[in-house]
Length: 289
Length: 283
Image 1 (tube, each protein chain N blue to C red):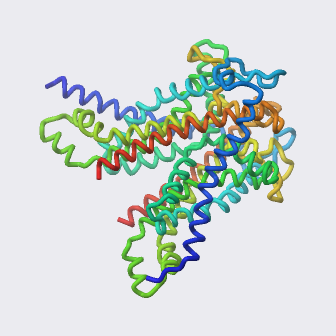
Image 2 (image 1 turned 135 degrees about the vertical axis):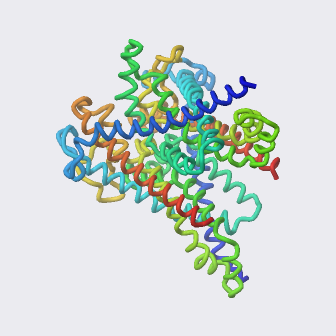
Image 3 (image 1 turned 180 degrees about the vertical axis):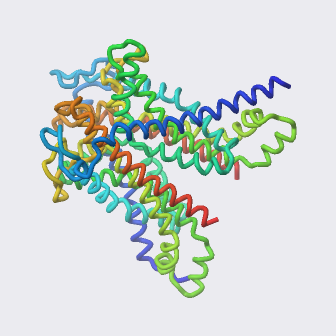
């Protein structure tokens, strides 16, 4: 086989674009975010409870925003993760090949539903329903956004967990059935534990997706920078704060830097979850080989 | 014994109902949007631009804007993504560059879309002075689509049987000739499928374009890369949350949602079906 150097070098340099994009994202958020620390201290940002960025002097406490992100992510995961795993188990263990061929594309198409459309449905369908059902002032709140976010989490966790379950060798199931176990016993005591690393990594990616979602929370979460104490409290997560406020902020102002700082917090959290999930996956690969 | 059987049956019912619930909800969403949106749907709705403070007229400007954004993003993401997939599948050796590249692509796939917006704002809009424009927003969306295309094309290249390469080498072809004449053509349909699926993802994105190039309103379609554009997702958000008359424009909102949904799900369905066909014929 003849070898040439030029194409290899060209292909390699084009590939490095991906590295540069990721590096630039990190660098720009640090460069534009850190200047906010000149105006105020890290502890007053992370632990401060007042977010009034346009007042003079601005109050830049991001605790309500972080709490909003965490609350919406937790609640939506609580709703979506069990359903996702149920669907994954159904498709992998119960559905016939014919049903699989229909259900897997349906699950995938659900993942393509634009988040703006879900946010819109939150405003025009879920909010009025919550309002009349629970006699509350506004239906745009934590619960509304979490229900919608669930829709975005389910297809991700569902398909990835299904792949993990399907990768468990058939022999293991047959051995369990041969010992007289029922189907559910086989699933819960044999197949599920065997697929656990893959399932955990799928759940983490779903949680990451919930944390980073913007449009749904921007339209349906109500947008008040408060630490939520009830399901019906409006919240303003980090993502929707950035999306809602960046447009009206003068470039280079303290508020501008604060929003980049919020982006940096968001990026570090999602990056951490992402790396944890890929670490769990790599453990699985080492074990199985 | 009976208790175990009962639990088994109960769980089977639960698993069936969870799956049924989601299929039902997806169908309900599609039906609801169709029922509420189809009345305003007409040829003129698609071909007229919005007028009277966006309370009348059609959605031609945001519709064409979305197509332009998709075009610009793919113009960037397809070549770079395919080359990266090619590198990972055909050239990469175990080494620092390869693991760094994999780490970067994996991380990119998890970056929140609004953070892509911040990145596009500081790099394309401000540092490179493209301004808030079709170019900035398109490139930002391209960066977002990059990991999707890289993964799809790497898998496409890896699926080409090694025999093909060996046969080409045996005929005296060089590595590049083999890739260009043998590997790329046999991987092309899978790559195209990956491209189609990433178009479905890009067309519905809102957060990355809010501050990189999406316009609240423009009287006409963008004619240069440096013009701002209207886009379907952002148009929905504007009409539903800050428009001049939110209740009056509700029918237009439903119509726009229906068009976006049909566009995105239509494109994605084509991609999903194509891929299923390719997998079946490959086996």
